[in-house]
Length: 385
Image 1 (cartoon, rainbow, N blue to C red):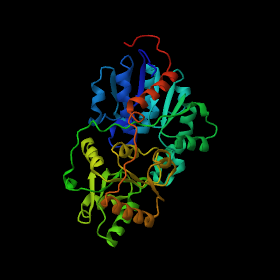
Image 2 (image 1 turned 60 degrees about the vertical axis):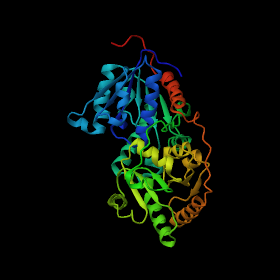
Image 3 (image 1 turned 180 degrees about the horizontal axis):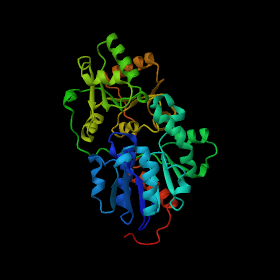
Image 4 (image 1 turned 135 degrees about the horizontal axis):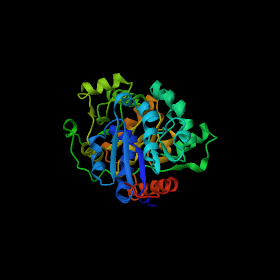
């Protein structure tokens, strides 16, 4: 990893205000390793909301500083991004802006000409799967994504699928400035604690993700209930996640607990210790997403030796080749697959996928990202005050 000695890296830390999202997991995992490995670099985490306590260990590091401005209109993320952040950048003149949310201040290179920018793009949902997004968010990305790509000195994609989507939708973007850096996966070191409602389960399907249309939990829930009605030997189904947007009927059914008698459980806002227990005790992980930038639960499942049933979308073919695949919206196919896999699990024929922990370590992935940061950052010419 290249070291950026005595430099100031300003990070858009807005993902760290909310735990349990892919953006937050990626940024936290990378920052944790980079901060440790580059003690001579000063990391300034800027946001319009406070850092969630789940990421508090970052704040204990001597080379980390936090700037939160939630005053007035800054409570609105877009206002903070396009008005307050550029003023902060021009006042501090950092060596690099790390834009972690696929968004740069409007007309960035003209307003902040001295500071290079590295921008993360986790997906291109607004173009590839627009119906899975809230309308305001979809149009915000359609308005800003291209200019963010143009004004970035480097673009870090979460997968080859995302890079291909960008190249297809925006063919004018220079391919050489786009880099693929996968997330890491290390959750075994955390404490393991059983959620009370499912501590008694010996076998169960596990579905991890925010309850929202893009995650497509409704198809799996419908298929599981139909399969259960057809035969009583189906193993239980456990959802772990938090409420997103849309899909209120699915969330309300899960949250009410009314389906527990059928064998469907919901662990809302699971802690890292509870998530670790769920992965270690489940029999198989299910991800029925309509679209993903990566799909971290696939790698997390593999790290625990758990096989997966995945929706048949490009990113899952890229990172989850050892899995079983089902067409995302084919409820009949999901019903047949859940039934067959349940019988397989109960017969003790559940195969474990291979997993290389060194390849997927956060340390290795942060080293890859650190090299890109160093190549883009403006050289440090004086010590920080």
